[in-house]
Image 1 (cartoon, rainbow, N blue to C red):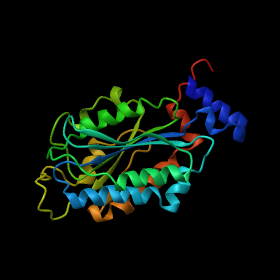
Image 2: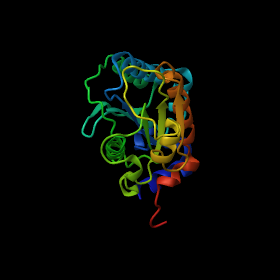
Image 3: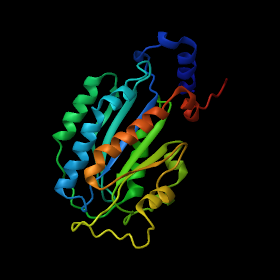
Image 4: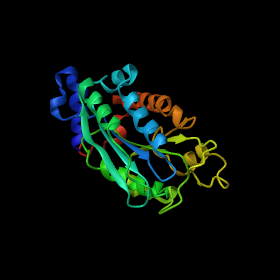
Length: 246
């Protein structure tokens, strides 16, 4: 109901409605795979790649393109069943300074997990819980990066729709190459991209972006963010709105 009122106010009043009114066009939660197969170098490539992507001119422009209804951003790490660490709590991205501050925080963050398991289902549930905190946002998007299929906990394809609701879940897969530090079994998976398309992503407009190993993470993250932020438009807002009483 509140989301319906916010959308109608924006449509009717246009620029007269300001960010101070509490509107948010998109809640975007980014989940980074830091399981045991991700070594120290790959960890830094992942976090520093995201840090660089967030302050690239194109991504900043996409974040700040609708000042009347900013994007809210949260970033977390995930690994085993109960291993989730919130790196950046919900931040209202109202200016470039917020993105620079988040980028600096990521560059100063270091890994803490050694669990080799990959619990994608648990990461989906954790991310959905985060997004439930942002009911004022017209669109909810969860993005999970990963370098292998799930091997612990509830299979991602079995996570109930009731848990994720109308959240769009996208994937950023790090296509595994010849790596001595991983034992992840891909024998029963045609490709990791296919695995994510079949088992992980869901919701309106969901997609999978691929990185050619960790060295390409920054480029892949930039492409993914631009695509996600471009989709957070007024025309898509009603997908998360139930206009009861109208």
